[in-house]
Length: 170
Length: 96
Image (cartoon, rainbow over all chains, first blue to last red):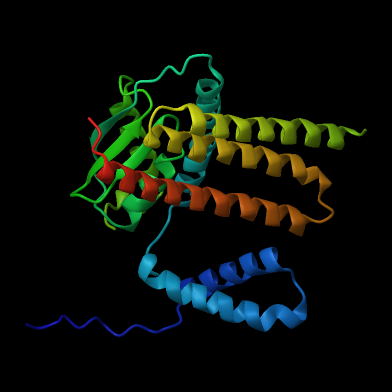
């Protein structure tokens, strides 16, 4: 059995350097900007960059406009989700019909689908239960009667716009 | 009390009410998965409101950025953890 040899790549590419700087900026925000702490921060940023390579390969691209539209769509929905749960929790009688809906996602299992599941779990009335098996996602819903499949498809379409060309890989 | 303090008071109280709602949901909702809804969604909005309310009290931009980072990290960990727990709960007791 032959293992296909991957073409040799330079270790430090501009995208990786940018990512490392972002990690370092995050570290500075969280820990503080005292100069004596910088060596630890630089090591932490380098380690974070190294760990991020298998999770999000450097050649991957995100669409900035897609991401902005997604955030604008996501924030009001996260607010609606919180209010929806609060309304149900404070109600005199708990009115819900929980159940599991199966949804055929077009994203293949992998990091992108995992991220989609994480985002969906913050949307109103929906909580992905399993995302692994051949693109079928099982989603727990507080109201299994509601038009969940259409909402899930709309969520996924908005998510796919972040990935240029609707990349459906992991 | 200035306008900024009033804003802080309103947002933080609203955030605390949402934390209360999340806890009530945890106690009152009928099954494990529904309870996870209460925790992952109400608490995240509650934390978001508290972070928003504390913004005007920050002396520096860095402090505000730190609060936003804390909120984002909490969102990320809540979303991931609730999914993992949901997966285990569903495997343990298959839902109809």
